[in-house]
Amino acid sequence: MKLIRFGEAGHERPGVIDSEGVRRDASWLVRDWAGAALDPRALAALEMVDWSRFPMVADSVRLGPCVGGVGKIVGIGLNYAEHAAESGMAAPAEPVMFMKPASSLAGPNDDLRLPPGSEKTDWEVELAAVIGRPTKDVTQAEAPDAVAGYAVLCDYSERAWQLEGAGQWDKGKGYDGFAPLGPWLATTPEIPDPQDLRLWLDVNGQRMQDGTTRRMIFGVAALISYVSRFMSLQPGDVIATGTPPGVGLGRKPPVYLRQGDLVELGVDGLGRQGQRIR
Image 1 (cartoon, rainbow, N blue to C red):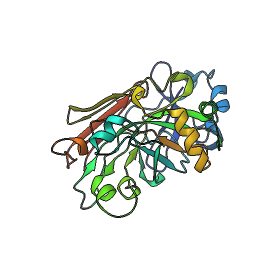
Image 2 (cartoon, rainbow, N blue to C red):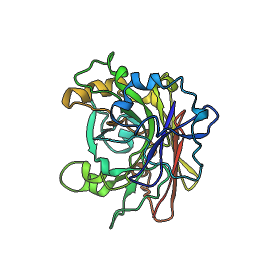
Image 3 (cartoon, one colour):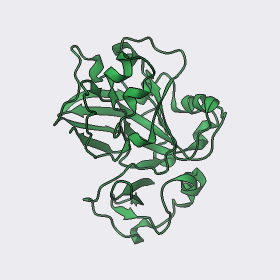
């Protein structure tokens, strides 16, 4: 299934995209795509629903983040060796973790407003794994059973705040709107192999990133297992699994986003996003 959330920011309702590509309102069946509704067993029970009987949602209606009730977003840095190299850093021996606050979430096509004084806001297309059940200290073999589904996430980063000051990366990762998520959450049957997906990102029509999840240093199952050693994961938590090469920081000279730019990105099977920079 492809799960969506639609409506005004802060007042989104749950929906699905049916087999014909039509948006449907699922709000009389579930309150939100959050909490227990994301349990893989609960989602499996909905696979046989005849969604064509549900009210249509116009394509003109805004899409919000495809998951509700997100407690935390765990980012993984430098998870593609080529991206580590372009960033001037060594490929990590174990996953590099940072946090993005839930307040950084945005709809997949919402405008992105640059932080005041920003000079180095950058882009990163990523595969996001969404947790569907309480998870702690799981093995790599157990990790896939904890996943509700997968989505596109753009990990926007203000590089001066991230890298040039004192403290942790979180400062450059957490501004409002820096984590557009969606357009939909593809449940796990839709994505049989998360390690065989193409990722791409364009700025103003120019291809900047074009990679594959096959090039991850640490795969999705390994990341979930690793993160669950240090913190419990709850339904709706998001793990952003890293970005392939082609970010603005790695260009010579570096290229950063400016007002009026258009960022478009996507992942195989997970749709595409687009943000206009304001």
